[in-house]
Length: 328
Image (tube, rainbow, N blue to C red; front, side, top):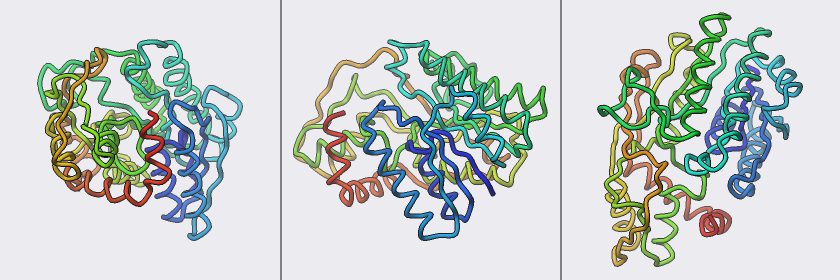
């Protein structure tokens, strides 16, 4: 199959591209190499994908470009059977400082993808959404019927994008699905994420830093589970026109997470605390019953198993990855 992955040099998009190539598909990646974090990690992802293409039956083409560029989006979408739209301006905290940029990329960029897709023979558009669309919980775990009241411009932009995707599915009969990811982690994740920072500090004999009092909870989802949910949508149409939670089986508070990583790697270290950021969600926890019913989704990694896999990968790639974590 011919698959376009926007944001395919990023964390989730890169893992999707890698998997699709390994499965024998012809993959085109569109990414603007935005330096939201050090682009050396994106270059590593590109090299991993090229290696898979050289060694396997799939193909890989990388295009440096932006989803705000209507011409390039139209050209690439017209040549794809499936579009996995992972490109976005990330960062809940950063969105508070520059909300218009998040609208331009996350909303206008998504509209460019959807407009191009509805004028072609696109089989399906799969949109990366976020648990940030929910905002403050009225109850937990979040199911898809929970009110969507985002508390950051980032969350608002992701909600607008998924609403457009679902509306295009209804109005234009364009098969489109929005997957609401819950705190994804794993190899090659953004170097400024909590887990990578906890691991790095422990390995360097420094205390993990928790923002706030550590009672905030997260539904950490291992990258392999995210990939499996996306791969299912190459053949499964039951979720077309829907927004679907993709989370884990675990919900853990940040302090416990820091303690678990500390106990594995540096039990002598004391946890330290810093000021919490106002834009951060207090709690996230996904109900995945809808994903189970429509996609047969079953998360396979507990947080302990996922962290162990990440730590093993971290050791193997410490020479290039750790400097990015330390400077983030």
